[in-house]
Image (cartoon, rainbow, N blue to C red; front, side, top):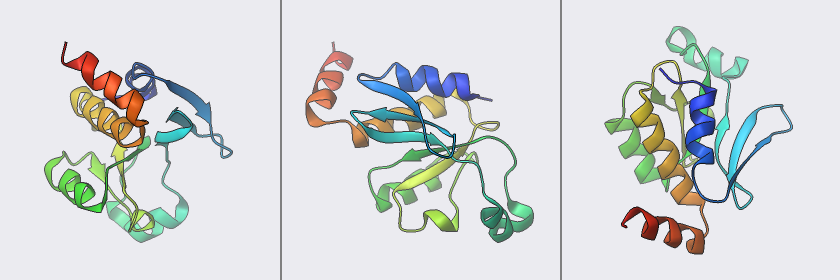
Length: 131
């Protein structure tokens, strides 16, 4: 089980990441001004569409590289990773924090950061990981 402190710790450990608050009052994490992870509560319209299958709890949105990667992530990840009709056509998934293991959360956030980081920042990060 993970929480917002875990999200912040993982996200802010990545180079040139900053935290901010969206206009809705939701937290988000950005690399060079591009968000890669954000608080995304399910809205009443999401709940109506999902019905009895609607997950309960704190929900994080994370970017993925593209729609093919999204399908792969949904197929290969735990049940804590899901999508909603509102995200159809968007390269992003949702993560139910109450159900995600910390190692999976770290992988999802890091991969999301990789999709948004500028090439220079990403190259330096990848070089530091191979040392």
